[in-house]
Image (cartoon, rainbow, N blue to C red):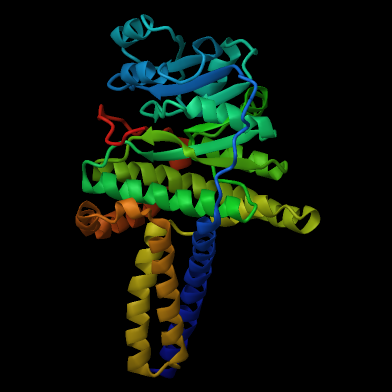
Length: 404
């Protein structure tokens, strides 16, 4: 092979290896740290605070009534929490049925709908006597003790708390893979981060805030997609810490079809790239001048490839470059480096997946993993403009498969 071509391939290999290895080392460190997470102790005699459960929904007629009924069934004084359905483009019969329940219904309508607009409009109409705001998606089901645990956690002056969002359904291969992905993120970006003294990542639902703090902060949010990422960056830049409660469970519907998987990931990737561009420079400055590790860590996360693509790229490129190295005689230490890095990547995933997922159903679902990797890659090619439009993921009526 031409010497210049060999040099080019070697430089390309070094660049790709460095980028993938940095991302692998990052998730591996936090995957190991996740084993050292300790659930925070709750206050034994907390003040019982008034809570607003805010549930924005866009054309969610199929699920919203059942979700509203379920949200009322909390082990918490009924006079001290309100279920608030923020109804965007619901059918008249759905609104009529919702109004038969002991809940608040706030109708909203926008030329271009977003979750941030819906939340802001609802809080404009609500009174200010709430102390905690809980944010749910239109398909979420809370464990019966969720509000009690959230309430007790705010005795320690946190401004924000993320609950443990887990799978409500695992009835298709994609739903299982989505559920596994959620738990990997819980382990790395919530348990692992809190174990090392950093903030938990928030998800967009199953989360809670000091009410007035949330209202004031949301008034500054204009995000079309990824409003939770903007919230998180605002808090971390200001030096606030987000707590994580692994035993405060909210069940979330997992993606069941390839099309929905692709749309959802497209929306997430677009928001990730947008906020990386906006905050990376500022986070580096904050790290150097103020020692703000949390803010820098979050911006650095946005530079990381999606976990499913990282795993696929590390394994595929590792095999390709090891074969090329052997063929053209590039130093053998690179082969060892690829093998070690690929091994650490696999271990990070193995460490982060709960033992309950080590089943034959998960094994069968792994057959769809290459398709998931391909869809994620294709989503990268179609993210242009995704952050400028509302991409809705429609939820279906499904029965919970876990006892909460």
